[in-house]
Amino acid sequence: MLLLNPGPVTLSTRVRNSLLQTDLCHRESEFFDLQDEARARLLQLYGLDPSQWAAVLMTGSGTAAVESMVAALVPDAGKLLVIENGVYGERITQIATQYRIAHTVAKHEWMQAPDVARIAAALDADRSITHVAAIHHETTTGRLNDLRALATVCRERGVRLLVDGVSSFGAEAIDFADMTLAAVAATANKCLHGVPGAAFVIVRRDALAVAASRTYYLDLARLARLQDQRNTPFTPSVHAYYALVEALRELADEGGWSARHARYAALAEQVRAGLAARGMASVLAPHESSVVLRAYRLPAGVSYPHLHDALKSRGFVIYAGQGGLSAELFRISTMGDIHAADIERLLQSFDALTK
Image 1 (cartoon, rainbow, N blue to C red):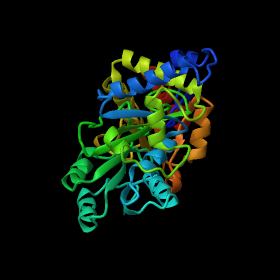
Image 2 (cartoon, one colour; image 1 turned 120 degrees about the vertical axis):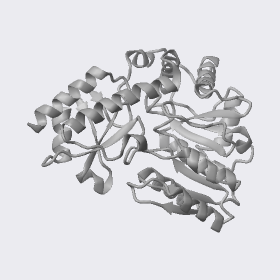
Image 3 (cartoon, rainbow, N blue to C red; image 1 turned 135 degrees about the vertical axis):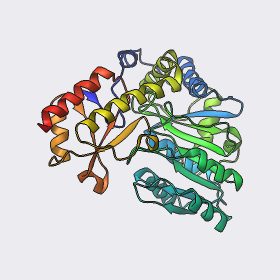
Image 4 (tube, rainbow, N blue to C red; image 1 turned 90 degrees about the vertical axis):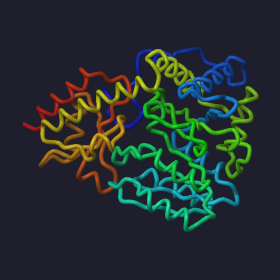
């Protein structure tokens, strides 16, 4: 079965076999060697200086990393502006609400790109805002939000940027050199091609130094401090860390994030062109979309449940639209151990379904 959903992904044989390594106690030096390698490779992926940045590991899904980032990096006296244009921006608002973090929302329709002028106006109108939270790749629609434009608005006003990079880290460009960018939250089981259970925050050390402590298990500053000391506060998902390290090694061998971007782009274009030729238009233009996942209009007269089940019977798992969009569109991701021949078989399966 090939997974064309936005994580977890179809594993390579190399990563799958890494799960068969010996059982390992998380208090032994061998585990801390593994943890150190994962943290170092995460920084190396985007060429980051470990004296300025920390890769902070945690056991959980990508949402755990986002929650840890938001709970820690908006100070007690700070205020957050959340940019919403899909489900995952709305999730950050829910996190801020539950932690009673002062916040306001720049709400957009799910099909909209963030309105940078409106965001700038919101920041100008409320000088108490210290941080902006944004989704890089909003998988609700497959839109790649413009981080550079958002960072410029933040930089001009002395505001720090927190990024949900859960479904972009490892395959899309992220300008870590911009001093406005304080942190990026992400996970092992999307563009890195690891397994669920390992997540992380890439965070500036100066932001860590003034982090709040609102949560216990996901306390970002404590996790960072203990990992720097070759320690861990709790029992991590050891085998997920094995897979993360092997996936990062494999990614480095393949040429790093830019090579993965190119691979995804070619596969995504193959899907887009193939479905367009079969009368299924993409929801967003390629220049507005990520290379990781794209959304498409359902074929005329075909419901999503029928399409999903028919493709699954042929060995492919696709993904529904979210909320009310489930009646209009479906989504296809090209993450994981997927190749051009697989996409050709997928397109032939559409031919069989739509005749």
